[in-house]
Figure 1 (cartoon, helix red, strand yellow):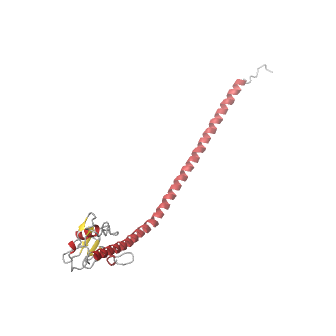
Figure 2: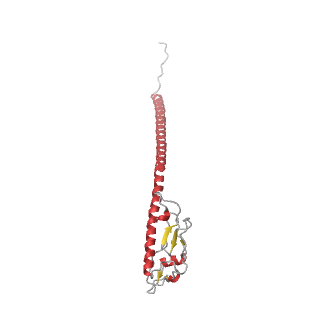
Figure 3: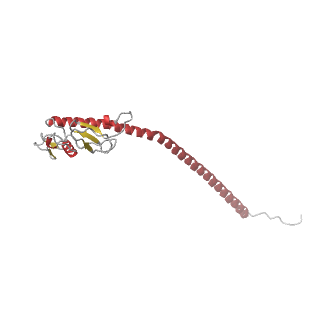
Length: 207
C-alpha cells in the first residue's frame, strides 16, 4: 500500500453521465425514426407517381378506342335523324296541300301559277293560314289551319335550316350543301341539300 487513496465518482457524477448517455441514445433513436419515416414517405410518393402514370396510359388507350367509335355512332345518329326529318317534312307538306284546295306550300296566296318562294313556304308552314294560303301569326277563326311546323327543322348533317325553292318547270339542282333543304312545290319534292353518301353508300339526296 503506497497510501494513495482511490477516488470513485460521486453518485451525482454517475447520474449525470447516465443521463447524458440516455439523451444521446434518445436523439439517435429519434434520428433513426425520422430517417425511416422519410424512407416510407418517399416510397409512398413513388408509388403514387406510378399509379398516376398507369392511369394516364389507360385513359390514353381508352380514348383511342372510344372516341372514334363515338364519332361513328354520332354520324350514324345524324343520318337516322335526317331520314326522320325528311319524312316529317313530306308528311306536313302533304297535309298542307290537302287542307288548301290541293295547293302545296310555297305559292303566294295559293296561286300555283305564280313562282313560289322560300319566304312564303316557311311562313305557310310555321304560321296559321286560311283556305287561300294567306297567313297570320296570331290564331283566329279566320285562319283555322296550321301551323304545320314550329320552325323549319335543321338538317342534322350540315346543321342548316335554310331552304332552296325550285321554280316551276325547273329540275332539282345538284345538292351542294349551301342550305339544309331543296324543295320543289310543283312536285312537292323535298330533299337534303347534301352531296355525297352515308355510311351505307346511299346518296343523301335519295333519302
